[in-house]
Amino acid sequence: MPDHTIIETINITKVYGMGDIRVAALDGVSIQIHAGEFVAIMGPSGSGKSTLMHILGCLSRPTDGQYILDGEDVSGMDKRQLASIRNRKLGFIFQAYNLLPRTSALRNVTLPLLYKRDNGKMQAEMDEKAQTMLELVGLGDRIHHQPQELSGGQQQRVAVARALINDPVMIIADEPTGNLDTHSGEEIMSLLHKLHQDGATIVMVTHDPEIAAHTQRTIHLRDGLVEQVVTNDKNKVVGA
Image (cartoon, rainbow, N blue to C red; front, side):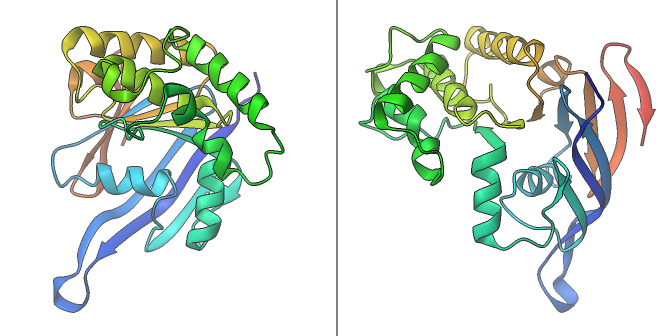
């Protein structure tokens, strides 16, 4: 498989506030993540990891610097352009699942297709693809269940299926096991491992070192800077 860079940030900064109360949440972060990698982003409260995740997920723009996503410079895009990029290229898994209540698993999974204006799919095609995604995450027998009828682990599986529906170039997982018990968390991590083995590029934000250890590399942030990058299979610092 040829080397292909999915994420490249070049000296990105993110500043909040004005005048004397300006705070740099990110203070010159440069990272690269390649196709097929499984990478964790860690850091203490205030380290900038949530801010970095929002920029990587095209949910906000850097104050300065460049963010190149899948070969496209998205740094200066407006909100409408960023929304289009998000829906075409990214799949999100959130700690709180973010499923619509009183809506079936199948309908929750089809939602990103409805927002993709040029998908050209009929409802039956969308339903068929959503069912395939739900079967992939082991919920083929729960497609008509609503979130309140599912366990936390099952709801997160629905969220994973939803993240996959648009064939994203990258999955962003924000504390994907944070609301789950140990057993359900292990099941979700096993599912993410399977997706990674099948070729998915995954960036996961976590505060839990044990969860981060599941990934190939951990990018440690502190005070808005990359403190170190650890290769987890060798437990060796490879850069900063």
